[in-house]
Amino acid sequence: MVSATFRFYEELNDFLPSERRRQAFTCGCARAATVKHMIEALGVPHTEVELVLVNGESVDFARQLRDGDRVAVYPRFEALDITPLLKVRPHPLRELRFIADAHLGGLANLLRMCGFDTLYDNHYEDSQIATLAAEQRRIVLSRDRELLKRRIVDHGCYVHALKPALQLRELFERLDLARSARPFSLCLHCNLPLHEIAAEQARPRLPPRIAALYSRFFACDACQRLYWEGSHWRSMRVLLAPLLDAPPA
Image (cartoon, rainbow, N blue to C red; front, side):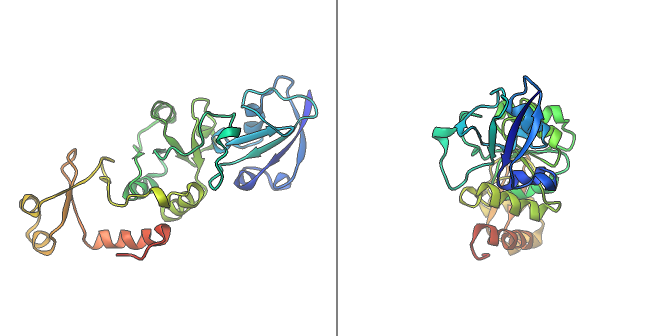
C-alpha cells in the first residue's frame, strides 16, 4: 500500500464528499494504482479532467502512483491554451459535437436548436453511447458517472442541472459555447443542416394560414420537415438571447 496526496480544482470538487473539497487530502492507493484509477476511485470521471500534475509535472492517466506523490487534478481550461502541457489526451477538450444519454432528450433538443451536432436516441444503451462517442469523437453528456468512467469515453461532461434550460446554460458557461453557436441551423428531429427554400416551394406543403402569414421557410432534406419564424421560433430566440449575449430578434 502506498499513499498519495490529492488536490482537485474548481468544479471537480462537486464530485467529492464535502470534507475533501477544495483542500489537499491524503489517502491510500493500491501498489500498482494509476492516476486514472485513483481519480475515478475518488469519484471523479476521467472525462472531466484535462490536466494532471504529479509533483508539479504533467503526466498521463497511465502514470503509476508512488508513495508520497502529490497529485493536482484540473478540469477544462477555457481561457488558457494549455496544449503544450497536455499529457492525458492529445488535444484539449474542445470538440463541439455531442451525444446525450437517454435522460437528456430535452437538452439534446436545445443543443440542436443552438446549432450543435447532437446525437440522441432514448433507446441507446450505455455501451452504444460510449462506442459512438469514441468512433465519432463526440462529448458524452450524462448524469451517470459510471457511463463517463468507461475506458473508451475520452470526452464527456457530467450535467449537474436537472431542467433542460438550466442544463443548456450550464454547458454554455462550462464550455464557452456562445462563440460557436449557430441558432436554427439544424433540424431538431434529424440533427442535419437546414437550408432556406423559396416560399413558392414551401406553401403547397403548409396549412393555408401558415402559408399566408410567413414568407421565409427552411427545410430538412432528410425528413422533409419545414420550419418558419413563427411564435415557437420567437420563444426560442428569447430563451437563447441571454446565452448568446444578444437581444432577442
